[in-house]
Amino acid sequence: MSGTSLDGVDGVLARCPPDGPPVVLAHADQPFPAGLRDTLLALNAPGPDELDRAAQAAVALADVYADVVNAALKAAGLGASAVRAVGAHGQTVRHRPELGYTLQLNAPARLAEATGIPVVADFRSRDVAAGGQGAPLVPAFHAACFGTDTPRVILNLGGIANVTLLQPDSPVTGFDTGPANLLLDLWCARHAGQPYDAQGAFAASGKVSDTLLAHLVASEPWLALPPPKSTGRDLFHADWLDKRLAAWQVAQGAVDPLLPADVQATLQRLTAQTVADALQGRVASTTEVWVCGGGARNDGLMADLAHCLGRPVQSTDALGIPPQQVEALAFAWLAARHVQGQTANLPAVTGARGERILGAYYPA
Image (tube, rainbow, N blue to C red; front, top):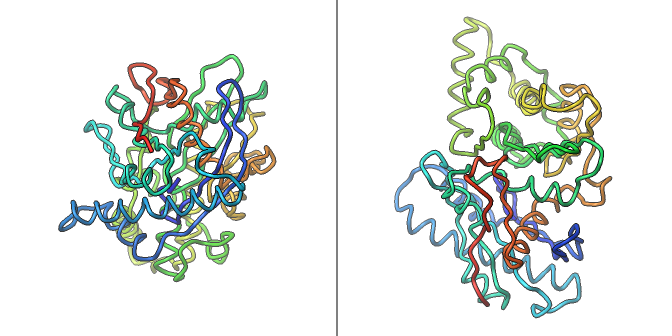
């Protein structure tokens, strides 16, 4: 799995029985080479010679995927013949379900050649073809892996935040809530020279601007839309933030611009506040909130979440799956569903016309 944060690739080797939760046997990860990360980031916006650049990036991405697959096999002491399939989501560079498409860069045939293992890829497009958002796809997995008799929220904090609502005797629901690490990483790289705000230290050195926070929320209509809904870098990006900062500054009159650390603190609170707003009235006050994704390692963000939600939040570590493994495990599970001939989307989540078998199969 390589997600919206563009921080690298996580892979798990997992046993996925058709009638029980998956079990992780090994984990491997690898950061993107700097040039590949920059290329993938640039491909999220229109530019020259996109077809060639995208194709070359897909080839390079598949090679990183192959390295991670081989590292996971080595960690488990297993050969390629022990594996039924690799689930490879690809790197999302456009997500426009309202126009009938979603685009994940990938070279699954190359990955099958490099690993000697069949590959399942292109998970989202069938749901979009059926009228759905194509995202989030993880709620079905969350239900299989984390569902209990206790009401729970599973919150994934990648580049974008999404929630899964697991409530006994009720259908599983879930949706994207807004930006998570995407804007935080962008601002931190620009003003602190670091790819991400480790432990929220940069944000902790600043102070939340309540007026800027209110402006950011009020100025984005998407945040007020009811689910099903999904989003990504097509909406939340540097230009989105810069325009709103400029508009807020004009509205403040002669007030001096905020310090960069104050903006970072406000963006961190924005993630927490939009999650809390999205959950308002949807879950009981006793609901457990379990957090996965890279944001679960950000102590400042976790504290902001607890503040905005008015309840404790915990990492999925306590449920037996480290936060960085959850989404990779989800796509291993989705690949297993494909080869088992089982549907994996939830129409109540994505808005699709019905349940579908997701993905395309590339034999070894």
